[in-house]
Structure formats: C-alpha cells, structure tokens
Amino acid sequence: MLDRRTLLNSSAAATATAVSAPNSAEANDTVSPTHNLQNDIEPRGSLPEGRVERLPELDMESRLDFAQAFRKWSLRDFGRNNLKRLYGMLEDKNIDPTNSPPIDDLLEIIGDDTNIYTAMRCKTTVQQVMWKNLVDGFHAHKDLYLNELASAQQQGPGTLELNPDLDIPEYAKHEIHIQPGGYIGDPLGGYVYHYGVNVFTLDLNSEDIFHRSLADIVPVPEDGKMNSFLDLGTGVAQLPLAMKERFPDADIWGIDTAAPMLRYGHMRAVELGLDINLCQRLAENTQFESNSFDVITAYILFHEVPTEDTRKILSEVKRILRPGGVFFPVDFKTYDQRPPSANSRLNQWWDHVYNNEVWTEEYRDSNFSELMREAGLIVNKNAPTLSKNFWNSLMATKEA
Ligand SMILES: C[S@@+](CC[C@H](N)C(=O)[O-])C[C@H]1O[C@@H](n2cnc3c(N)ncnc32)[C@H](O)[C@@H]1O
Image (cartoon, rainbow, N blue to C red):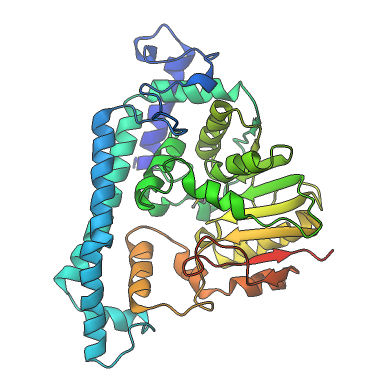
C-alpha cells in the first residue's frame, strides 16, 4: 500500500525528471542551476532586513499566521483556564498538582472532561493544519524548490556531503511531530520543518532568533581554544550557521541522518554566505578522528532517540571530543531533574500520543547526566541556559 512517504518521494522523482529535462512543460517554474543564491531566489523574497525567505504565497502565509495565533490562544488563554480546571480536579482529591500522579491515574481523574480534551484537540489540529499548509504550498512549487536545492549543491561557501547508502536507524524514520514524511521522507522536508517549527515555538524560529541566542551561550573550553565545532542532529543547520557568525575563523560542522534537512541547511548557508560543512552521517558513528572537536552540541536531539542509542552517541562524543573539550546537549529536563507537574505530565502524554514524539517518554524517564557520566564524561549541572525552568542546563567536559 502507498504511504505518505512513498507519495512525497514519487512527486519528487517526477520533479527530478522534469528538472533534468528543462524543456518539459513541468520544468517552467525552475531557476538556472547557476543562479546566485546569495541574492535571493524565492518567489517573494525576504522581509526587509530579514534572513528568512517569505513563503511563496500570501495565502499560505496567512494560513500559517492563523495556525500560530490559534496555537497561542489554545496554550495561553484557553490553556490557562484549563490549567485552573485541572488543578481544581486534583485539589478536590487532595492531590498536589505540582507533583503529578502517574499518567494512568491522572487520565482517570480527568475522565472525559470536554474542555481539557478540546484543548488537546486544538493543539493537534494546529499541527495538522500547519503541516498540510506547508507541504501543499511548497509542493505546489516543487520544481522551483528542488531546483534551488540542486543549484545550491553545486555552490559554496561550505560543503555538503550526502550518503544515499547510509543505513538510517528505524528510530530516526518516524514522522516525529506528525510532520508528513518525517525528516527523511519528503525532499522538501527542510523547508517544511523550518517554517513549521516557527509555529510550534510561537515565532522563535522566524529569523533564527532562538538558534542565534543559543549560539551566544554555547560554552567554550577553559583554555579558550575554539577552532572546531560539531553539531549532532543538526537538522536544517541553524545552530552551525549561528556559530559561524559567532566564531568566523572556526571550522564548523553539522551532521544529520536526513538529506532533505541538510540540503536545505546547505542552501541557506550559500544564501547567507556562511562557510559551514554538513554531512549525512550518524551521531553514533560520525567517522571523525578521535579528539577532533573543541566543542560539540546537540540541540533537541536526545529526546528523539531511544536510550540504548543515546548511550552509543555519548560514547562517540567522548571519542571525538578533544581532552578539555566541551559537550553541550541542550534538551528538555528529564524527570530526575524535576518531577513533572500534572500539567507538564499531561502535555508530555499529548506530545507522545498525538504529536508522535515516539521516544520522549523514554527520554524523560532516563537520567541523562548519569548517562553522560557512564560514558566517561565529567558532568556539570550548571550549564548556561536560555531558561533554567525549561531546559536541562547540562554540559560535560572530557578530562584534559
Ligand atoms: C528535533 S530535530 C532537531 C534539529 C536541529 N538540532 C534544530 O535545531 O532544529 C532532530 C534531528 O536529529 C536528526 N537525527 C535523529 N537521529 C539522528 C542520528 N542518530 N544521527 C544524526 N542525526 C539524527 C533528525 O534527522 C533531526 O533532523
């Protein structure tokens, strides 16, 4: 039976044929492979002073704005009312809402409360509307975007290494966040992800704001030497791009299993004129030499990885980090760091069940600092953070 991944890829295959036969009717919407990407390419350019391109159609932008506003309303106004409701239900049973009971007990207490389930339904609907809008909108111009990626692949600055034979682990193939095709199955997945995450984070992705703030706080080794940097699970390479701006003379690398994400990241590196190196490789087998990097990061990778594979990645980090080097894995707090409130426990459950965050429960139940220690790293639980309440504030070093 055909699934979404097959459909998305077959539309790409048809497009690839059209691109290689530029006289065919389907290839009208294309750009020259030598087009200068540094001076824009998308149909509608970027906002003044902006670094992220506008979407190809105003309708698409409006629908996305609506999705974002709807998400904001369901989390903030509607969400706050529901929070009071949930906490009231628990207090009626003399349960402290700041320390959640196990999820099955919590769901039993909530019963079939319409408001609480409506709030969850709203969040799911936003995700569905947002992805559909982006997938449909980008695929309506698929020739243009695929050709833009193909064109960027022949240009620098920076390098892109793809490996079509990479044996991608099953856990990295899921449609995480219910993104159609997931990270690997839609050739335009990088575009879709970059704009979709902006809705989810209520605008923090719009001008790479979040990643640029994160790059500002990435810790450097005590000896001050920062010549080589690697980002694991780099996605569309927003962190490497921001790190290149902070450390223009350093060698900046990013690896990921997903070619669509890396191709889009490389295209943006070319557009922004930033020299970064992206490779399609596994975080558990990076192929870099031992002691290669001064600093290694991983931003929101580990909550999407099963614990047994996390162990493999951490031992690879220990191998390729140089003595005295810093590892900065920014992710959500695990439950050993802070037991969940009823609200956060319910949100995790929604994320897992309705947003297809397949491994997030396993991640939250793990003890990440202990896993780093077992891998032979020296753990620091007071790492710089953009929010002490929200992020894990963990880093580690390799013995000098
Ligand atoms: C939630 S995304 C985070 C992307 C990026 N760090 C960001 O700032 O948006 C997780 C990324 O990790 C990648 N990934 C998952 N497992 C991986 C592995 N074993 N090795 C390398 N990349 C992996 C996925 O393809 C995806 O792009």
